[in-house]
Amino acid sequence: MASELVPIGKVGRPHGLDGSFFVEGASDRAGAFDRGTTVHVGDEAYEIVSSKHGAQGRPVIRLDRAVPRGATLTVPRESLPALEEDEYYAFQLVGLAVEEEGGRVLGRVRQVLDYPANDVLELDSGVSLPLVEACVRQVDVAGGRIVVAAGFADPE
Image (tube, rainbow, N blue to C red; front, side):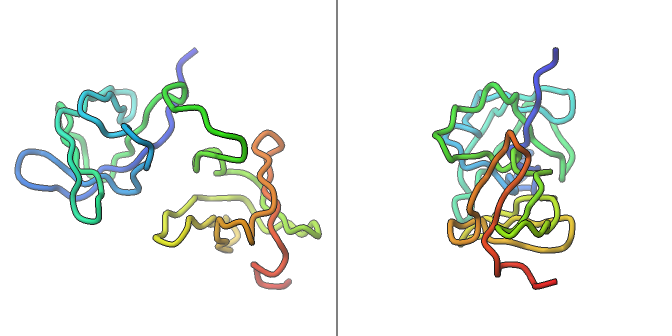
């Protein structure tokens, strides 16, 4: 069975003339963009041949060959480090149903946005919710749902 690939960032704007680029939405996992690391774009494996930090500490990398801007960089799921209890990777939250403590369904997580203050759950219903303890009461990845406190979404 093929390994599940999970996103760790996207190919962003170029940096310099040597093929290096900023990684947009980069994983903050230590070592994710180290020189010598293998990442995937589609079904192809690429090696990171250069790695440094650019503006605001964002990773700037160069791969062993060119990739298109906007392409998603992925790694095999089993290469990710184990998490502590009550920790989750953003990709694990995508697709989960979100409901208020009273049972009202708000939608499904379409994506997890990386904002400076905190991550934000963007739902398919158009609702955006902060990924903070005051809002998110329970994350049940196995059960496929997230329970949030009432009052963070518009009333019906």
